[in-house]
Amino acid sequence: MTGIQFPEGFVWGAATAAYQIEGAHDVDGRGPSIWDTFSHTPGRVANGDTGDVAADHYRRFRDDVALMADMGLHAYRFSVSWPRIQPTGKGPANAAGLDHYERLVDELAAHGIEPMLTLYHWDLPQELEDSGGWGARDTAARFAEYAELVGARLGDRVPVWTTLNEPWCSAFLGYSSGEHAPGRTDPALALRAAHHLLLAHGLGTQALRAVLPEQAKVSITLNLSSVLPAVTSAAATNAVRRIDGLANRLFLDPLFRGHYPVDVLRDTARLTDWSFVLPADLAVIAAPVDLLGINYYTPTLVDSVGPAGLPVDGPSPWPGCRDVRFVQPPGPQTAMGWAIDAQGLRNVVHRVHDQYRPVPLMITENGAAFDDELGVDGVRDDERIDYLRDHLEVVHEAITHGVDLRGYFVWSLLDNFEWAYGYAKRFGIVHVDYQTQARVWKDSAHWYRKVIQTNGIDEE
Image 1 (cartoon, rainbow, N blue to C red):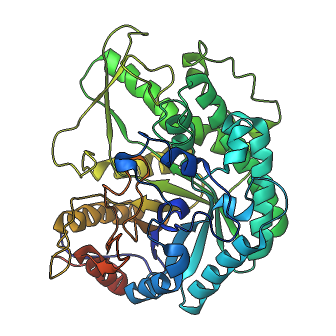
Image 2 (image 1 turned 90 degrees about the vertical axis):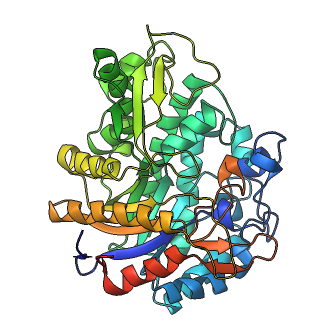
Image 3 (image 1 turned 60 degrees about the vertical axis):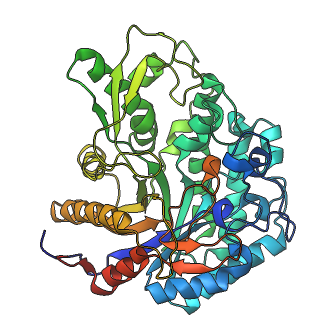
């Protein structure tokens, strides 16, 4: 493919999450989160790893911001640790926690980098989980209070606010499969959690609108899936419908159409009667947003293995879909075992544009883990460069076809604590030595800097 140029004003950024990079888990009044508890529970995280130190970004943020500036980033997408602001998830703000994020935001501004703040990237205060977590309606109200505290303090300096990152993961990996914190395995509870997360977004949006300047933008980020049939059959087509319903429409429909998908309610009726959805909830959830963030990594291929209800071993993140079989797509994979297919990103952005036409879009996470090795001449990660190039070509193509796509954030700026995989998987374009905390640019970081400098991709 020949060289391509992105539109003037296209935003180039990188993304991180608080628990994955900050460390300093017990510093300056921070309370415990569900991920502190989960990672300290034997057998939950690979190698017994925890986020206690991670990439030590809490102490090293100024050096990391200087690194971002050297890379030429236009924007930095980061998350705030809820238990730094409210150690128990309720009550007045912890001043030291707000002070930290104020220093970070001011440091970014000093380097000409736009802060893009996410309020929730999975680190629920443990005390709220002990009171029911996202299965409890009250947690949505507590989130709105937290949003107001952060918005009131930083609203004059942060132009883009994201309420939630990937509520699908919080609900279904956290409460159905138990792969993520808090490690629950109750499909009905997971569906309730999904609703309360969306309600938290709606209430949080209201709280932010009340304290932010008029020009500030409010958004939510979804990890949307390109769900495809593994074979040509009626059963596979139905499996696609069911998984698409839980992965995509369960979130897109209430946000942009004001209702839950009827077929998803029907498919899950044997698990729950959905009585936790109160009459006014959907209007709150569907309050207008200014931006939709899309996270994409890999496609999803499905088939059916038999009659509904056929047992599948172990807990599943797909309530009511135990008869659905997930098929590994052919072709190259990342170190996560995820198939590499940029066409899935094309499917996702065009689907949102064509069927929902919501608001401007941003790719808020896209990237890949590979088995990076640090050598004397740095980290040669050509596979990551190829992955990023292929997906950026799809982004550019979507823009040329009329999709209102405003920016791209690589996941991730730094190697980090990769949730249940601990430190075994490296997504960063900057290598982190977890013993010394030394940062070394991978080849992909140098490549990405050139992309930013030229606002495009060279022919090579």
